[in-house]
Amino acid sequence: MLQTRRIRKTWTSRPTIEGAGVRLRRAFGFHEVPRLDPFLLLDDFRSNDPGGYVAGFPWHPHRGIETITYVLRGTVEHGDSMKNRGVIGAGDVQWMTAGSGIIHQEMPQGDPEGFMEGFQLWANLPAALKMMVPRYREVKRRDIPEIAADGGARVRVICGRVGGVEGPVRDVVIDPEYCDVTVPPRSEFVHPTNRGHTVFCYVFEGEGLFGGGKDAASDGTLVLFEDGDAFTARTEDRAVRFLLVSGRPLGEPVAWHGPIVMNTPEELETAFEEYRRGTFVR
Image 1 (cartoon, rainbow, N blue to C red):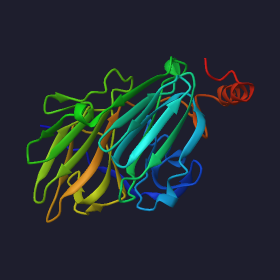
Image 2: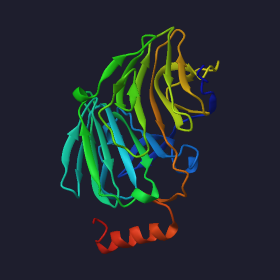
Image 3: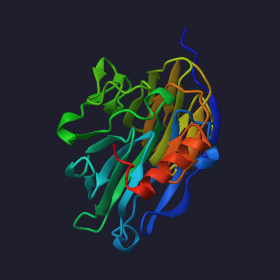
Image 4: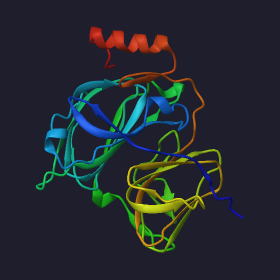
């Protein structure tokens, strides 16, 4: 019999400002390390005020991590030091492996009504792959399968496997799952999970009951789970929509400053010195 993952902790995302003045909500970040290992950060950048996001994230470096951007409304224009250029729109995903070093920019634009909605997740890389060759993957909405799961839930499978359907992002070292799940009213969604993996969900519409708990989690709530074999979400009179994310913990030391995440302070110092000297990109 599958052991349901119980809730370990819940908390609400917090307002913050990043980039050139982008107002967003941070679900977790530096202060939660290593609680969500191998994940480092999740930002919720939903807004109907262009003044709060159009300044964007001008050119900046990354090393040692992967950044995963998922857009619900509006667009994000990307450019980087590998000469990648592209625009992701509603339903699209950008999965960028910074590896040994990349310099990029992300510039959001709202939809015709001025709405910009999406999320950015940071996943850590293990020490053995911190300096891997960078890579960039742009996944369009049409290439992300959406399935009807048992219990009536609708699941967009970006990475991982649900009901025998595999998402388009594969060959990622932390063996992650990343899904956009909608559970209708008075329904239940059950999904097997790998024991030992970190599992969390982030609610961004409606409200639901998770892990067999009796207290509903609503918009802007992150739910972190204990170990177990299965994730469960249940609804009463309202539907719920959330990101469901899991991955294999690295169990390694984290040295993190700004956009660069390494294993030791010395490696951080080297990275910033290389950036100052113009030798950051290999």
